Image 1 (tube, rainbow, N blue to C red):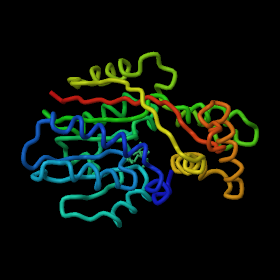
Image 2 (image 1 turned 90 degrees about the vertical axis):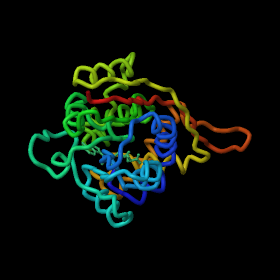
Image 3 (image 1 turned 180 degrees about the vertical axis):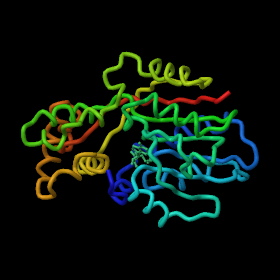
Image 4 (image 1 turned 135 degrees about the vertical axis):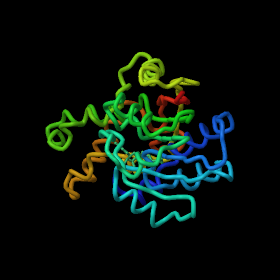
Length: 276
Ligand SMILES: C[S@@+](CC[C@H](N)C(=O)[O-])C[C@H]1O[C@@H](n2cnc3c(N)ncnc32)[C@H](O)[C@@H]1O
């Protein structure tokens, strides 16, 4: 997913969940003047600047949005300017013991929305977050535990025409897709790393797209394989994604309007923890 404009236009679901969790948790976090805030996996910076920043106490010190994708970071830097806001490239899945700009800073609050399911090595990601956090600091994480889109990836990577582009499909499927208790599993990762877990749960949620075109755009916006597939095959690939979605029954015909619509359930992990 490197198309910042497309993602910005099709991320209603992700934005809705971020706003809901921020509304729920921000006031229960302990804030002090000058707090340094980090948003990991900020993507195009829309949620960071339009949803997170306006909800922070006015006396926060600095807000940094960090993302592994240089395209996203560039987009966010060009689009959103504020004296206390900046964006930087950073890979949460790599060893950060070195002296990157982000690791040198140290943060009091770390947020992350819809990013952690992209990282297969959860223990590495969480211990990186721990290192980036100052003692007494808090984290609020929201990411996918289970989603039918991952079943679409699993099915498509077995098809001969797409297999060559999706050899590492397992890397892009949430580590909790087959888990019997994602909340408990992630809570254990937090505890083992040294966090005090304030709250960690897996919630079921639902989302509906009024048209299949909207679902297609949002699938396209987050698909990690498209950039490897030749452009002339994109439509065929996306049509196959939708066909698989129909098989999985999250695209169905609404007989009242004689149109295909999409409605599905998914699960997110919401975690609030503290470094003691
Ligand atoms: C679905 S987007 C979420 C963007 C934004 N947080 C939001 O809620 O709209 C996931 C983002 O995580 C980033 N990401 C994936 N793996 C990452 C990693 N290892 N380190 C940092 N960012 C990563 C992707 O580049 C992408 O921009």
